[in-house]
Image 1 (tube, helix red, strand yellow):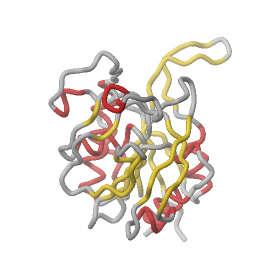
Image 2: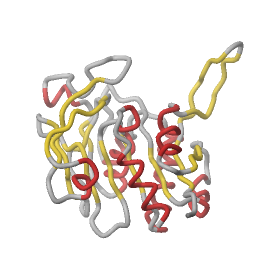
Image 3: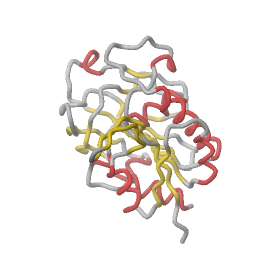
Length: 230
């Protein structure tokens, strides 16, 4: 059987290791580990102009978590809490559009889910505590928290994870406001926020607001890799 190559969008941030402190292309190791454990070959995709050309050499795409999507992209003025990376937005919107045109399997995680929604015409809530009055989506300031999501029956996500309540790793302060046309919500937090969607008719297009790479269940990565292999 062929080994699918899975591209993962990466950060460009100032990082420090040993005596060095400089801008680096980086990604939490658990993304890479999850893809490898699922039988794929992980390839980091830096946020540089023209990176969408890599789609022709990939079998699947993960749009990873990270900073906020630029609010102008969904017609909003920026909230004071928003932190953006325009270079990353430009690269990942181009990657997603190329992957969509090529029919590649795509998994959006946290920021990646939000970016897909915006790319397809949806909008975002810029700071969830302002709307819901709590911090349950990001209860740990410098790490992963946990909350429960309800997965709808008879959906692709239910086939992978099972319908009903699941405790998931979480760290985000934004979320979906208006869901883009063509996407179907498949999971919700207990406060009603959409926590997952899929796109019927696409070979594999799933977005999740939580961080499956930080959990123990690799089902989403296995499903993406299987779709990429096909």
